[in-house]
Image 1: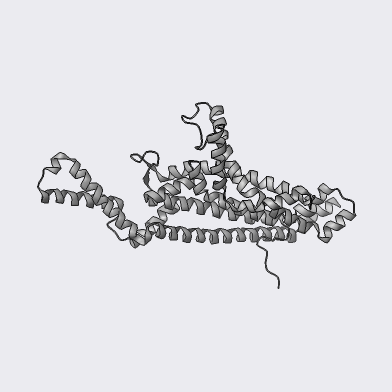
Image 2 (image 1 turned 45 degrees about the vertical axis):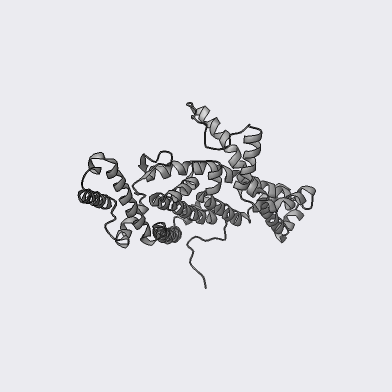
Length: 376
């Protein structure tokens, strides 16, 4: 029997089926990459227009150049003592040089394709650092540094929140109507408040009143010199913002998944499994959890997308040096390259998340046929 199966696997028809499946998957993957890529390009292009106010930001930059050059000339005693016409000539020349350096001598629409190419490659030039405006760093380096901080905070919080809500909902679905189940239902409306709202109270209680936890920032100042000391300081500073995020979403998450599991627990195939005497753990894994994995994964993917966006207010409350606080500061300072760069990072992370979720759906849900041809 084994020899027959091996010989059948080497038949031309079997090889053709495998190649056809691979070609179908490759075609589907390519189409998804192209469509997601087009969406990313359109989104970045719109971001460029919005961040530049349709070109109005150029007028603000030109006015700022005139102001900075005039102040620099007046600060020079030798230039200040020159005749007015000569001084004005020098100011105009310096302004013209600065405009050429920044590319502001050309209309905004003419420069837009170049902006788009630079944005897609994250070649956004230099920007003043938020901690030291007198110095400058590459925008790409600023974004990379802040992205790592955001992933540490929101990655830790959202993963903990996801698994806590998942297993708690499974636990409650077995205890429908208990006092704990009723308590979770009663506490579900508390998730209407965002995490930063609870973060303010946590700071007041644990940082200001009790003084047992730091109120904000990523590590202590000055940072510990050893790796272990830095890791312990990071963990200590993570407690309050992570706890704020979890409190802000845990009860609604448990309530939603618990209701979802209760609905699927009443299906006929689950009742049949119970009648066969299968263990409750096996019934939960095979007949309740597995069929509900696709929507649960979609919910987690949406949570990840929210994580990529970062909590602008939450990071600001906890003085966390992530992408959210960076975007808030960049908007206030009018730093267009940083604003566009943050949107590009979000767009890339969103596109990667959606693409990976497509593949994961095909793996966990046998009903999804990747690249399958339509049947009439």
